[in-house]
Length: 133
Image 1: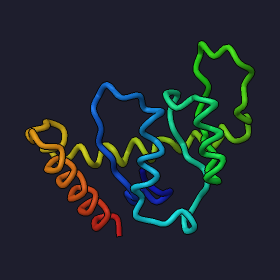
Image 2 (image 1 turned 90 degrees about the horizontal axis):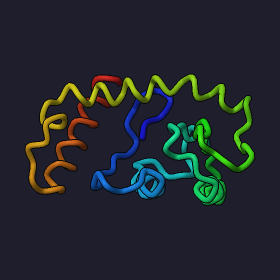
Image 3 (image 1 turned 60 degrees about the vertical axis):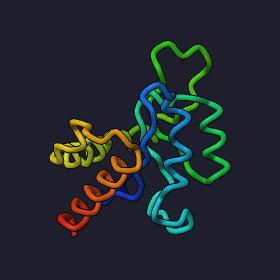
Image 4 (image 1 turned 45 degrees about the horizontal axis):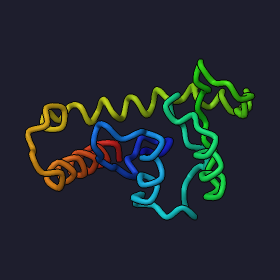
C-alpha cells in the first residue's frame, strides 16, 4: 500500500492461493500510519477487489474502495463514475511495485521462510522511501 506520493505505507505477504479480497483488510491493519492520519480515504484497487461485502466493511472504516466493476457482475453497479476518474492514478501504484522489482531478491524468491522474505520486502520499502524523500 502506498500513499499518493508513492511512499510505501504497508506491505503484507500471503500464499498465492488466497483471494485478494481477503487480503485488503490485513494490509490496512499493517499500515505504518494510523487510520486517523491517512492522507486520503480512497483506496484504489483493480477489478479483483470488486466485492459488495468488502465495500461495506471498508465503508465502516471510512475508506471508499475505488475499483472498476468486473465484466461478469450481475448486480447493479455501485461505483460512481466520477469516483472512477480517480482510478486513472493507479499507474502510480504500479510504478511503486516496479520500483520494488529492482530488488532481485524479491522478484526471484530465494527465501524459504516467510519472515525472511517479509524482512527483505520491508527493507526494499525502506530503501524506496529514502530515495523518494
